[in-house]
Length: 338
Image 1 (cartoon, rainbow, N blue to C red):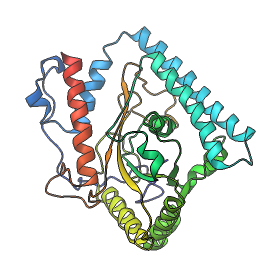
Image 2: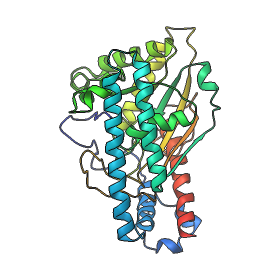
Image 3: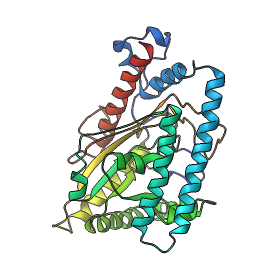
Image 4: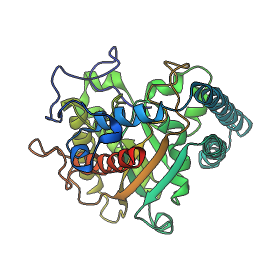
């Protein structure tokens, strides 16, 4: 559901050289021999490679069985969401969204039954989400799994409802487009971004703030588009989207002095389960012995601007997200190789 900010004809907005110098030494050791000190020198994409190598040691028959069962659960979840949206056509979109989340919840339970470790770690108590609306800022991993699980993962933390910010193309997708539209997303036009970027970003920011003013929460992927390797906001385009939209929201919010909302950083980790976009590669590798997790921390006061000298600056949105994800992956590598 992400937004390609560079060019609508390109799958990825990745320049020849990343904006941040995140590349570190190539892996040249057996994963079983890795120690904590070495793991801490590795970038996120290399840590995922280690995790994948360990998960793939599972015997082929078990992996194939898990793969087939996973795809059945995924299709069943999609069918459930489509049926719910059609049965409830004309109802309030919050009710439709809640029903679709129920279908997504069944999919999540199916994944847990298959062996996927599903976990949500939130520093915010559930009751806080009932007191005021929140703006959720999430990373966007390449598997696309988070767009099927995100709502239910957040509900596990106490979030009952929210509106997505997504590219307008999604509501035109075959079969599921109508279901997506029924959730009343805040749509971003790639065409308008290309022709009048500032104007389109301001229009989206206004709709986000108006939604928050109506006591409804909003989620946007601060990277803008999906990444395939786990690296967070590693290009100038992705960093610019985070900064431009966040700053526009702050500017519009000042027009509403009584507006009270919280900001939450959501760090998603789904790539060990589904490292490829399921809609592009339906037969791609599935690892039902992997992890599907979300970490939620307060983001009030975090800068949307990138620190080009320190990619892990905890005072920035992207920097804190990288730090959280890298720590989680290091712990998992240590667990797998123990």
